[in-house]
Length: 485
Image 1 (spheres, rainbow, N blue to C red):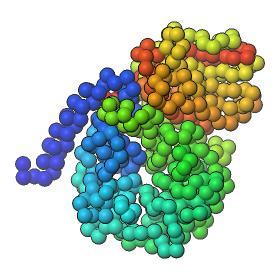
Image 2: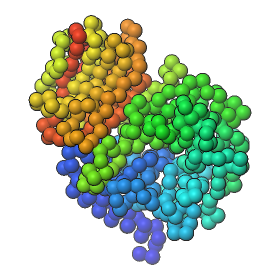
Image 3: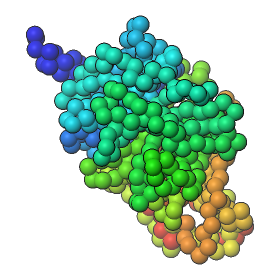
Image 4: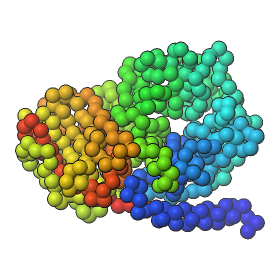
């Protein structure tokens, strides 16, 4: 037992077994997802340090292991071989008393420094940049003795924040972008350069925004090339949803050509992080925030869920996204399929072969004369609880209507919509239902993600609707999904 590596491995096994027991205790919670990642208990927020090391994916995340509320957060840690099934690992980073991260180890990223795993993260208060060096198994982390490596914002700026480093390598060295904002002007991303990840030179702003358009503070910036362009993804305050800025990267500045929403629904999908895996895919996870009271979160004993992993691409100059194909590995044999069905005008046409609170659905519609049409999920037998996902042909908008999703008056029950002109194209809808999580993708372009909290255990019906006329359903498939634990 004097072997440190063996001791660490032994302790990790004990931890995993203990966490498995905690997960089992909470498995009957009707709002707790079964195929989205979340810690065994307590608080989780931003994804951090996403990296593929060897053939293993590592996910770090903001974590309070003691209470379902943010505080002096740590970096939680989980690993996966397929991006879907996860195993808990020991906490990677914890605040060091009297250190620059004494009040929390906040958001950051992970890089491969010539075979050495390195975490670059935010220390608070005040906000600064720190690093930690890992062993080959990414189990044990040692903080750099001269932290912080970036102690303060560049001179000459009155900032609204200074956090969330994102690092990449170019031919001439390492580059780092930091989320910030300038008072009275708007969000800004500061660009730095280094040869060794320890000594950083401030260069200039990578990109700047206008407060009235993109908020006063840019959190969690990600900067990466994709399909011939460069993209900055950031989560602005007070918008509450992440945005993307597409453009050309010249002279280490982003010349923005288009701005769009990563996910339409405010205060749900937030703080995404992007990384490239060995298949060359640009992958993204985001934090799915709770949309219920703190009292409800405290009673449940957990808060926060990770989104499913999404693959990013560019389509017609816009960011496109879809869930990784590995998700098919947790489809059960309970498969329902119909095709070429005309939907008469109705508020609800029940599909008797589909039922549940953990499903994947794919559907292809053509409007015909319908004013609106789509899918009904998590419906109670009498219809008092239900969530609608569909298309409004008059407004040319896709929508997610959760205004009747719960009888609980204390939870948020939003309605979200986004412009989508179909012309003569069909509407493809992909839906992932996981108890309180709903992730929806329209034509692989627009994502709408939210949380719902039905009160009735029988709010599991699935069906179709068409208002103001008929709609054509070309194809509908549904699968019951397995638990990943």
